[in-house]
Amino acid sequence: MSRTPEVIINRPLQVLHRCLGFAGALFLLVAVLALAQGGNFIGPLILSILAFAVCSKIKFRWEKQAEVGVFK
Image (cartoon, rainbow, N blue to C red):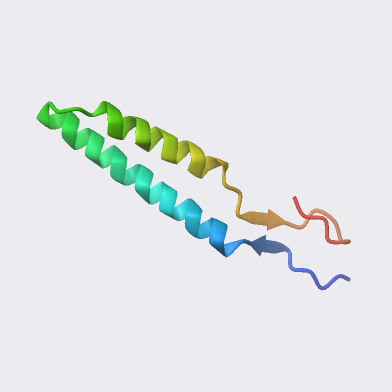
């Protein structure tokens, strides 16, 4: 039996993932408020979409696939 853990979490990538998610939500809120007031909402909306897209591509959790220590 190997001593490697079942799941490895990369903490710096997890922090980056959460920060980008928060930034995406913040830009989405700014875009909705700008739309409600009749202002320019395209810029914050594009930034929100980009932040969520990059956030969804960050992988910070690796699960063990085999007993030898193969992570995917």
